[in-house]
Image (cartoon, rainbow, N blue to C red):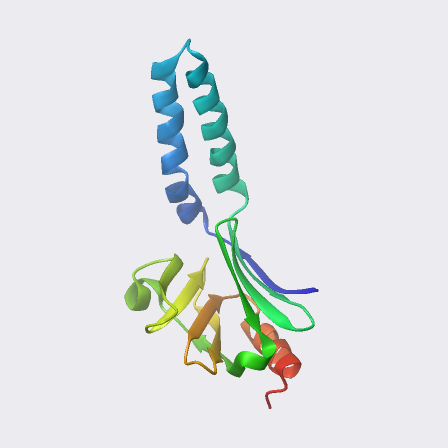
Length: 152
């Protein structure tokens, strides 16, 4: 297993993600001193820390597949034999997909995993699906995936 790219969400995205857990913590105060208030506060605090510290977009390669990750929310496994092309592109997440994070649909225009930046690895599959993942090392990741998949 090899980590080809790991790009953390920018601070603005992490703060947006933390809005829900903050509300859970705030509403848990209304439940004090009941036991449910303590449980809600504990869960809300745990998820709040998770959304502030962990979120990232990663590209991980194994011997037979490539994993595109939006940690800790989502992951997709792409088998190397299903890949028809890999390249790098400039992507504008807000203009083309409506924002950062997990955007789009893999059955339509494509699925974008965007943490920050504008360079992305674009993977086309035999069934027509398209995946894009932003990366600070897009050229390196695309080259490594192409070599592993046997694409010139």
